[in-house]
Image (cartoon, rainbow over all chains, first blue to last red; front, side, top):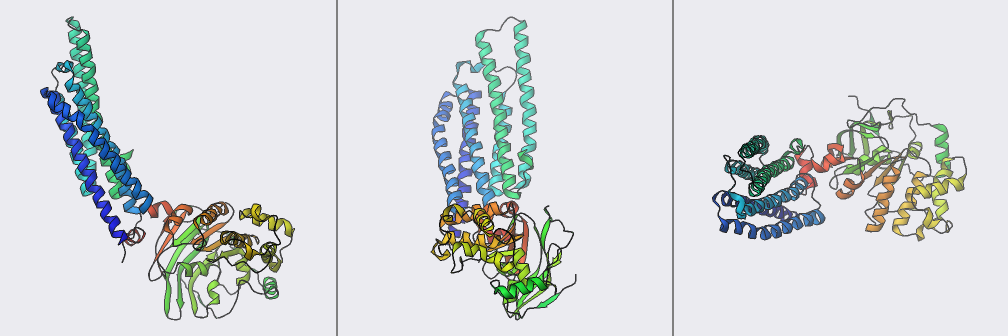
Length: 222
Length: 292
């Protein structure tokens, strides 16, 4: 009976991790939309919602520690709890990065968006997070590799977009139209591009931990 | 693979009377192979089982067990009650000789020498392969005599006081008993008694120490001391331990063998691998409690 309850607890933990992950994914998508559309209300909602995300994260982390201490899981159960424990950190960090985007959206200098759009970047990053969470929920090893491949695509795209921003800045400097506000906007945009790229990294981490969980395969961890 | 059949009918005791033991020591010498194999995971092999079957009358207690135990490491045997893990342990120093109905087939090699060969004296073998049991079983003698006993009956030369002190030190008991060596071993606590038995076992300088659930009758503090001691013993001896406590096996062993019902050895390998990612679903199910 005790072991059946333990197995039920593992199932509950999986559901709760996925649920928190999807909440954070929604936070990220809404922050990205707020940034592009200048939607202060949505951006504020995202910032305000982070406290709840953090509390749920700490609660789930505590549940993992309880499982380690009280159930002493081994083999597949051990890999599941250990992977979940690490994945929770990635999910919480994605929540923080969503807040970064939302705070950028609330800044008045957000209008500096040259010929590039962060929309494409956030779309890919959000897709990666969603696929990584699906892989974790289903225990799908093949999907983990697909997420890792997609991170290469996102990294390349972020690099090209950052390059375009810098080239745009250089062009404006030639036209003597660079001022402090513009520089601050460029700096913020570059940070945002980096944040989106990090969301992709966290999605890849989730995939890597999931692959370890499913097949004890550490390939994607390195 | 050839099989040597050894039908065991003799009544022999590890605590045999000194005269008998001395006579056997004089008459028989356990030979040691000059070459040793390598275990699958590296390390020199000290004990190798090749297709070992054990029967108690018609009941098969071990089913075609083959494995190589590395020297100088701790190897744990786990599995449900009746799976044959203690039977295997007792094969290594021929304790099953004490069971009339027991019959061992296959080869069980200690440094490449089959311990069931006719020219092997079980008593001499047990000096090389000591054993510690589940219940501490000190003799009703002084602490000193408990430790000295094995050396005396084996006729080992040297400074007895020094040997007793060294054995008690290695068993992490010296500091607790050095001022009361004349006190009866039975007056010690359970954990101290078990460490005394370990001191007694190692006093004769064995190569292998077998432990059959050595901490199952002890409280957590005494268990912790025994586990620390096992870790230290592995620096000088090969330790093979049977335990029902899987977390204990995970904590203290380098290698783990998993026996399941029917006397089958299902999996043997690095302890980390067994407890993190076992090869066999039956092992995964057993260690995660998904059985029954």
